[in-house]
Image (cartoon, rainbow over all chains, first blue to last red; front, side):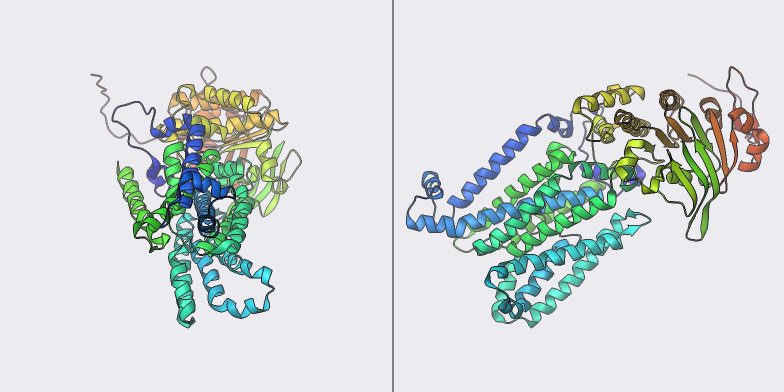
Length: 369
Length: 269
C-alpha cells in the first residue's frame, strides 16, 4: 500500500462503513446499472442541448424549437437557432466530448487521475498554435485559397498540441517506462514556456487582435461561425472513435507498462495512437472554443465514481458527462447576466478548481486512513 | 523449448547477466534461485521478451522473442511480475479478464476466469474490488490473471510458457502451496514453467529442475536434490545453510542463525 502514492485507487476508493463486508460500494453497485446509466446520461445531454437551443435572451418554446429545427418557424427564430445557437451547441458537444475523452485516455495511459490535457501542457501547446495563427497568421492567410483558411487555426492548434504530447512523453521516458511524475513536471514547464510565448505574441498584437485573443483565451462557444465549428467538429468526429476503440488498451495500461506488454499490448504503438488522437481532438476544440479547463479532469472522475473503472464504459460515460458539463456551463454563463455573456472558461474553472483541490485533499486523507 | 544461451546484459556499465544459459522444458517446473541481485529477474525478462540481451541468444520455440510482436508473445507465454499492481479499482473478475485476448468468446472468457479464480482459491472474492483485498489476495489475483492469459493462449494454439517472478513472496504457507500447485498443474498440462523462488525448501519440493544463479551466471542446474547442497548454497549465499535429509520426499533448507537467547516458552491463552 505504501508504494501506491501516485496511483488512482487511493483517490478513487470510496469510504466504507466500518466493519462491514467490502461489499456493495457505489463502484460495484454502479456496475449493474451501466447501460441504463449511459442511456440516462444520453438523455441528459439531449435535454441540455434542447435547452441550449431554446433558452437565451429570446426564449423559444419547445414546439416552436422543434418546428424550427424541422425547417419551419418564424424567420427570426430560424435565424437565432440556425445561425447562433446550433453552431454553439454543436461546438459545445464537440468540446465536451473531446476534452473528456482526452482526459480519460491520458489518465488511463498514465495511471494517474490528475492527468488532464490542461495540466500536462497539451491545451497550452494548442493555445500557442492558435494564438500564433491569430496574431501572425494574417500574413499567411492572405496567400491561402479561401477554402483552406478555416483549417489554419485547428491545424496550428493540433500541431501545438501534438508537439507538446510528443515532447512530454519523450522527456518522461525512463528505463523503458513512462515516469508520471516527470511527465507532469514537464507539463508544468511546457505550460510556463507556452505562457511566455503567448505573452510575447499578445505583446506584439494590435488592438483588434488583442480583443480577439483576450476573449479567445478565456474560452467561448459563441461566435465561432459554422465553418470553424464544422472543421473542428470534423477533427473531433475523426478522433473520437480512435479513442473509444482503445478501451482494452487503457484497461491494460492500468497494470503498468511492463505488465501491459506481458499481456500482449504493444505499449509504444498504443501510446502513439492515443497521443495522436488526443492531440487532434484537443487541438481542434481549443482552436474553435479556446482553452477550456478542467472538463478533462472532472468528467472522467465523475464517470469513474459512478460506473467503475473499465474503459469500455468509462470512455463513453466520460464523453457524455463532458458534453453535459460544457452545455450546462455554457447555459449558466448565458443565463447569469443576460444579455452579457461571461466566458465559459470562467465557469468551468470555477467548478474545476475547487474539484481539483477536493481530489488532492481526498487522496491525502484516504492515503493516511 | 525456451532457452537462453550465453546471455549477456549490462545496464550502463553494471554487468547484470554474464553468459547465463538456462533451458525451460515443456511439462516441467524449473526453479531459479540465488541471492538478491544475482540477475534472476533480468534473466526472466530476457526469456519473456521484455528485455533484449546484448550478447548471446534467447529462443522461444525456435524464435527470437525480441522479434515477435507483443500480441504474439502474449499468446505464447504469460508472466507474473515481482510486484504486480493495478491502478484502477477493478473487481477481481475484471482484473483476471484483463489477461484474456479479445479473440476468446465471452463465454469462454467467463469459464477461463472462473477456473483461474478457483485454482487460486479466489472464487468467493470474484465480485470484490481489488482495493478491498489483502496484499496476499491481490498477489494471487494477479497470478490468476497470468493463469487466465496462459489458458486463453492455449485455446488459441499457444500458452506454452509460464514465467513467475517470486510468485510466493507475500503469501502465507497455504497460499504458497496453492500458487505452486497451480504452477504444477500448468506443467502437467504441458506448459514449461519457470519460477524465481527465494524459499529453497519450496523450490526443492515443487521443482523438477533447479537452477542456481550467482553474479549473472547459472552456477549449477539439475535435479534439486543434487544441486541444492549445503556446500554450494553456502558458497552462493555467503552464509551457512543446512540441508536436511529428505523425509517423505521433502527437504528443509534453512540458514543456520545464531540463537537469540534461551526463552523456549510459548504461551497460548
